[in-house]
Length: 141
Image (cartoon, rainbow, N blue to C red; front, top):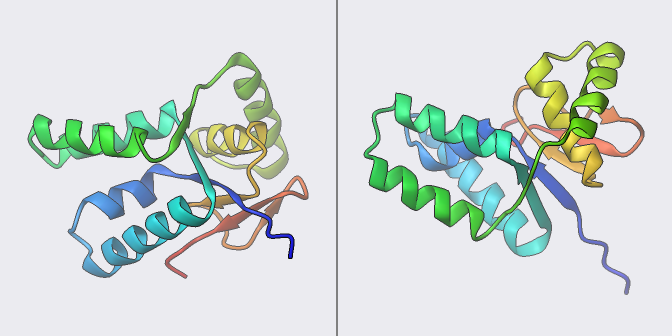
């Protein structure tokens, strides 16, 4: 049996739901999805996602020590990739082709650049296939 692992890119909204309990059902679903992906697949996010996540937690007025704890929990369990000028170049093409928002285009470009086949987000069309290889999955659908 040849089991193929997914390479899953995670958006900041999934992380936010996983660590903030204001929406209990999404919190539980996001936690379940992250743990399933971490243990069964290769999971990635970008420095952009980590920055967005941190910024939102500060807006929720979480104590910095708690945010720092979550930060280290994430970087110790999920691969963090950097943005490059190549990523941004691809993001322009994605934006023109798919008419996504700029920040979403960068996320899609990062996922493609890192050979991911799944993007977990609630911000884009569920089940959409990008460039014939990246499937958008909204875990809350």
